[in-house]
Image (cartoon, rainbow, N blue to C red; front, side, top):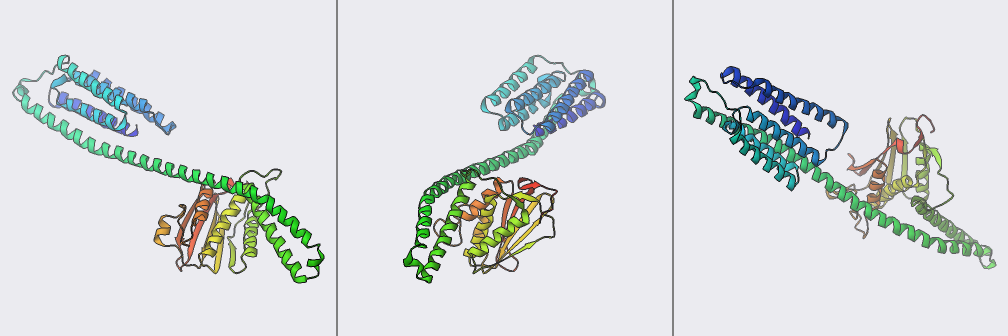
Length: 416
């Protein structure tokens, strides 16, 4: 619609210029007042269209059809008042048909084409004849040839300018639809994985509870209590089972299936530090350093999904061979930025090109690559983004950007 409005402005300028040149410059009398009124009607249509476009983000095809019908009628009225079928600018009908072919559906295109054909036929029978001066009477053929050349040039230039822009817009729309289809496929994949994880968590809950009971009984058996080494091993087993139950509970919380759990509100800095400390406890062989920027951090809802996303990034860095990981945290007025940098081998070019797609992994393991895939989609669902690159001194660098508005409870709070 915006392109049609621009085209109409060009048409209005061309009509007014042609009317003035022919009437005053060439001495061919034209009904100037009615023709300028028609041009003024086109101006009013453009102003109304512009006002509508400012308030809306989409235009329906019937509205495009009405706009093109209006342009065909305006062109017919101007041609009727300036010689009808003898006017060399009859070729401008082809521009309207070409635009309709690109913008409208099949039946609407045929409607525009048939209307243009009927209008052209009518103009050959009914029109306001031009009264040429005696000086121009003998040059009628030359005038018609010159006018035809001008009309052909206008149609060719406008077709190139506007068809290329319309085609580019359509290509952008196709790319946008392709991204939406890819996103829908990824979200369907995530739903299937979520259902699988939720079902597995339910099924694991019972045997884990049984293991916890059995291990508790073992600690009260004389055969075990007489051996300090066995007691220590059973306690380690209890701790491992407890950690498994915590993970299962986290999965159910993320799936929205845990009940009676109020959302925990904490300081953003405390939340990130707790994630880092839990990860250090589970991975004592890898150094993890946290660096917070000199900012005030708001209170947030401790979303377990964010915890898992950050944990996945740290796990991926460790599994890729990193012995040191730096987590850099900062914020601005609207975004929370978390960068995870490691001293591992970094990403290959293929990995960077396919970053965030499922089953794209540098670890060569079946089913690998799902961690980063889940991180990218979780952050995207929160309105954020994830980007990956290789550090200047080697290693991988992944940056999470999450809108503070989706996490913060009270932006003005300065909890550390």
